[in-house]
Image (cartoon, rainbow, N blue to C red; front, top):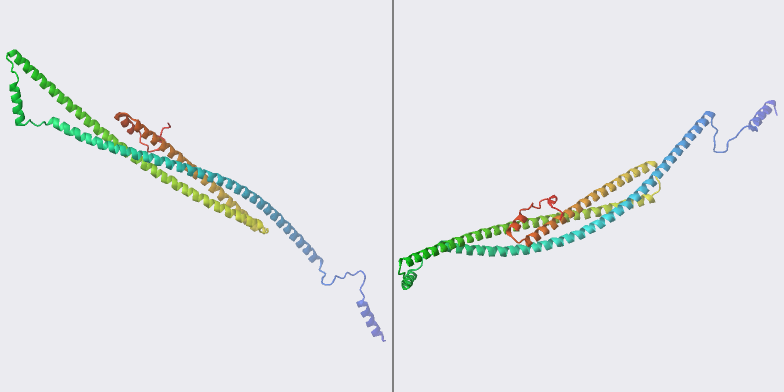
Length: 344
């Protein structure tokens, strides 16, 4: 072997030997410079901090979700209790309405009977007025006696014993004048009595007509108030059914959200906003329904007071003994407003 060949073999053998202090990376890995290694470590720490922050946000969102679920559960329970209370109140209102309808129907029947009695009394009064007018007319304009009757009376007078002295003649004239004056006074008294009776009967007829019109007007007012109350109850029942449907829908959404796996923090935030909005709407609806129920109960109480006042007034009219009492009852303050009703 020549010296050049030996030198070349020595160099090749030296290049193929691995010193013990040199680090060789495993297969598939690559050595990087120190500044790249520091940059990679910095990026790793930033990624770890980002992951920790996201984990904290996720934990916070989960806690808020649990709180919202608990609040929604409590709200659903409260809403269910309030709905049950409202349903019970609606049922009581329906029972009260049925009772009021029965009372109103009985009052209407009594009013119709009284109106029939008033109509019969009206006919009797008209007949009595007609008879008294005919009698008064007959007293005012008496027909002269027929000629035959006058002749018979003259014959009877001639047959009577004539006075024989001036004193008896004066007594006869005096008694005849006295009888004529008494007859005239009796006729005037009778005519005055008939006029008073005619005026009284006319006033009674006017009072009965006014009372009948007032009863008809109050009965029509009661019917209108009953119709308004029934419409209010129907709308209240419809609103209750709609709230129950929305509550069922909210419960289904809550159950569906509980079955779903936890998503990112953005989804939690949107769900939190939706749950908060739904909770606010449910509370507002419950408050509005409570106000409507209170209004309906107030209308029912006013209707009961008005019906009782009408029954009391009808009973007073029925028990009245004189026309003045009936007139005073009719002239009282009309029942146009519930505030005008006095508690009895």
